Amino acid sequence: MMSTKKQLLDIATSIVMAEEIANRIKPEVKLKLEQPQIYPSPIPKIRTRTKLISGIKLLAEPFLYVEGTGTLKELLVKTEDNDLVVDIEVDGEKVILAPVSWLYENTDYISEISVDYNEDEDYYIIHISDIKFSESIRILLRGDITYAFCKWEEVVA
Image 1 (cartoon, helix red, strand yellow):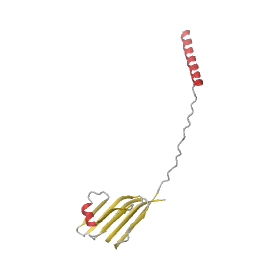
Image 2 (cartoon, helix red, strand yellow; image 1 turned 60 degrees about the vertical axis):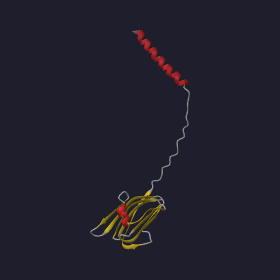
Image 3 (cartoon, one colour; image 1 turned 135 degrees about the vertical axis):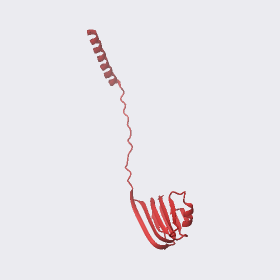
Image 4 (cartoon, helix red, strand yellow; image 1 turned 30 degrees about the vertical axis):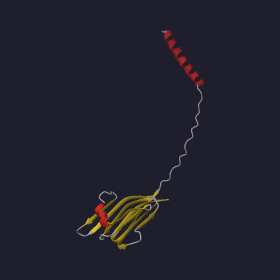
């Protein structure tokens, strides 16, 4: 029995000595890792604005002109004028230039635009939403309108 205890003690001593030797001869490696500079990006400030007009005839002056970055959240127009022309330019490019009657017949497959016609009272409701812009947006409504409501968000510096 004594020899088993002595053997275990010798083994334990050998393990401790091996660990000590390994720690002494272990090469010292120091890595100098550069930590990337992390600068918090500023959280953009978003301002929501609205505009409402009613009972006028618009021809050449834009209903809405916004410079900068933002999103047209909603444009809602009620008109009895079959020839009302919706003219929207985003970042210098025409995206819509059409009379309301054409939009009514052809916008079933465009998710951002819907046009409804009330036959009983003879008026159109135009709804345009979620159009993003990075430089500017210009909306012209050429013709007679009953009312027009617009809501947009713009990034404020």
